Amino acid sequence: MVQTASTMLPLGTKAPDFSLPDPDGKRVALSDFADAPVLLVAFICNHCPFVKHIAQGFAALAKEYQAKGVAVVAVNSNDVEHYPDDAPNKMAEETTARGYTFPYVLDETQEVAKAYGAACTPDFYVFDSNRELVYRGQLDSSRPGNGAPVTGADLRAALDAALAGRPTPDEQKPSIGCNIKWKPGNEPEYFR
Image 1 (tube, rainbow, N blue to C red):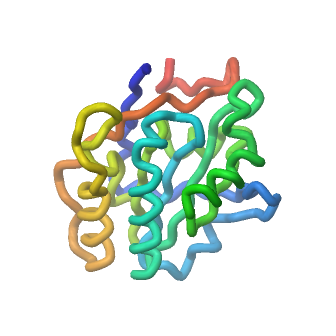
Image 2: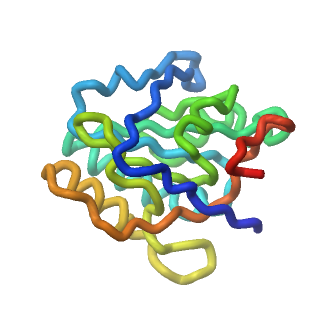
């Protein structure tokens, strides 16, 4: 299992725009979340063992924070031609199986992943009410096989701070996961 770390996009970066389809073809755009005080963008997929490890905990965390007003969207940027387990029909199955209560959209061109500097799955980004990046990194320190429970501690601390208008924690650890499965020849500079 090859491990890849987050690129750690600079704090203060404005949320890159997007308009992406969910498995049913409905477009979901950054502007859809304009009224939310906090936005969480997660880069995930279906087949990655790191995502599978945290999926249930992430689904519960997302539901909890959506009730507090946080907008949540998950993006799958993997090459679905070479990784058919991440195809839209499988995304729909994953949404149902995991109980995802947020849009799960496909970044077929992989341009949104590049705009966010996303490198791995899972990769988490928290934006404040001005849509400026206040957190990027791991859900928590749990990884497949390390015995640490999935608590969402790091992401929770960031979301709580953002909701309260407080600075997010200074120490932000990169997420670790499978690399985004780039289409051949489409790999970003930071992947090479």
